[in-house]
Length: 432
Ligand SMILES: Cc1cc2nc3c(=O)[nH]c(=O)nc-3n(C[C@H](O)[C@H](O)[C@H](O)COP(=O)(O)OP(=O)(O)OC[C@H]3O[C@@H](n4cnc5c(N)ncnc54)[C@H](O)[C@@H]3O)c2cc1C
Image 1: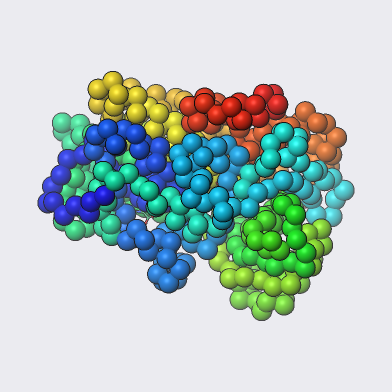
Image 2: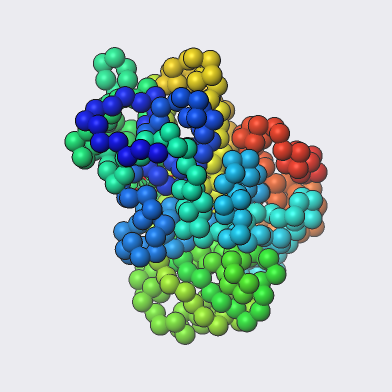
């Protein structure tokens, strides 16, 4: 790996952003990079400091590697296994064997078991920092890393190549630029790409809790009037918590003393997972659905949060980005093998065509759940209870739900593991 200081340089591909999406794409492109695809990665933060605990406050960190934990679907775990990333992070990941979904104050409730899908795990929970360390380890040696540095300007030039200006003063030309620069960058605006945004008027309060017993690999999703609360198994007696709260109360909850907050969480969530005995550090995130109105242009692809940022209710944001990255890598690898310029419209359009149904379905599901469960309307409440009861009673529906949650609902996940993983195929077979 080189940390290039050349004044101007030309690459086949420049990836902007070393968050989860950008780093995953690099692993997916390893074989082409090793065979001569010239790739540069530009990241605002120094790479090791992305995961270094002492590198500053969480608020100053890139969101991929802050104090949160991420639910990886079974499909994502299969992709990481194929890439050799899973062996780096496996020891830090906690498997989910059962999921209980319930509605506060209502009788509907369902239970999804790993045996419904005949797999050892429905998914995995991992601290973002451990995931980041695993993604930073073993990046392709031939990669040029420009970090800390940032892209300050981007244009598609007259000869239809992408041209980037960096804060350090260098310029980079590229056949293809992948903007994996998160949801907060304004590079897309520079290109005239608008965002479509829906605010849910809620924040996620993210923390962790210790309980008075082992979690036994259960995950819980509880819908309340303010929105969903997720408890996701982490350490032996520890859960990661994503707690949806109205915008008006978030500051008060962040400032509340530990005993008060434990009381409030326990009364909103109940005792199904045990008694909460301690609470970890807290952070909050405003919740919105944000979609870029264009994701592709010749020589340009938006990836990860830059393309779509989802409500975390179903833990799908990164899982979807990984399936996108896998589909994009497949098109780039194929074009590189055939000697086709990788920024050509047919290449980037081929990628988007392949992923747009997966994106639409995943975004729709992530958007529908918080909207449906935040309704006070009695008819809607009854029908969602019936939905939960239906899930509890009907094995086929439950299997379909499990299949979606596991990230196996879309053909792209199949493509991502190059159709080679027997177990993955068996799981798909069991679920269909
Ligand atoms: C509360 C919460 C819980 C979540 N839980 C889950 C979950 O359980 N499962 C799941 O799948 N998803 C989850 N998500 C979503 C997931 O966190 C995101 O999908 C993921 O972090 C997006 O990563 P990214 O790489 O696209 O963007 P980012 O993490 O934002 O990375 C962008 C990178 O680009 C860099 N950058 C930006 N601009 C520039 C520039 N101009 N030049 C150079 N570098 C630049 C930044 O420094 C950063 O490192 C959750 C989200 C939230 C808010």
